Image 1 (cartoon, rainbow, N blue to C red):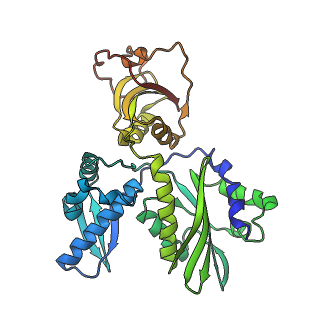
Image 2 (cartoon, helix red, strand yellow; image 1 turned 135 degrees about the horizontal axis):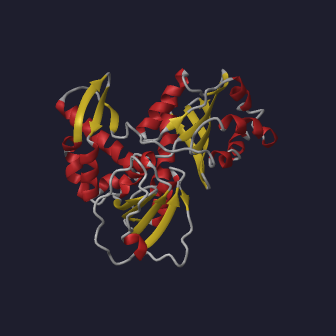
Image 3 (cartoon, rainbow, N blue to C red; image 1 turned 120 degrees about the vertical axis):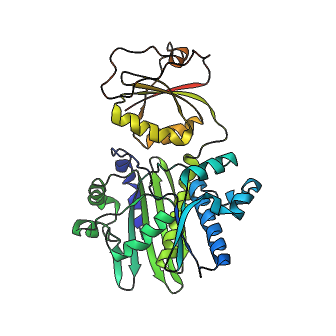
Length: 356
């Protein structure tokens, strides 16, 4: 079957879409199976929910084994805002501020709520034929549940007649890929996930490929049900993405200048840089200046989520000029008034400049 390689041709088109990753609103909500509402079962379920959240925030299956997290894992209820029982599961809402503060104090690098949106082309092959999983179908429920469980913003195609035809095994060939490329361009997504899942005597198995810009990965997955298979695929994607956005331990001091900022973009920039602990130094005209501790690769990946464009720094532009910018007279209407400028500081670290 030549389905998967054909999908990879589409990734160049997706990489230029004007997408802006939005915060994942249910990032700190975890649904965990529970056998009963007995205290022992509840404690075990809360610990399982904590492990799920930790993997969602770090992409590291070994993160929970850190001694610094022993107390949190033993009593995760100190991080819980509320929980409720729903059928045979417990739905746990962890408090974001308390959780982030506690995990960072334990030295854990975290992946924030701004995450690349993933367009999923998922084909199910069974004895009944081949079907594209489309938005709104019953078969989409396991995919959406798995994406939420693993902290991924998943989008699915609408599955109209054109898409159904374009995603059959007969049509997914290099010479016919234009039809599928055109179908993909209607979706505002950052990354592409292509999956061909097959029903077997033992359950389900799949070949999958994932691409974000120039970064790509893929492999095989299996599960005893469609839900288990979807969870295995989403977990693999999450573990691939997380290291690109984690707050790195090997951070350095960076001065970041953002050009072309208006009121709306100021709010977006604040939200985008919040996981990195950025401090606003100056605001004037359409320019924002921040100081933060991060790795350059991590910062560039975070800014790429908003389609910000890096601007080359002229060799003669000194970093000192960025540490205490003068107030400009043409403040745009609506921007918050600037706080008193900080005292000039010695220039240090890396200077990066980006533009909307």
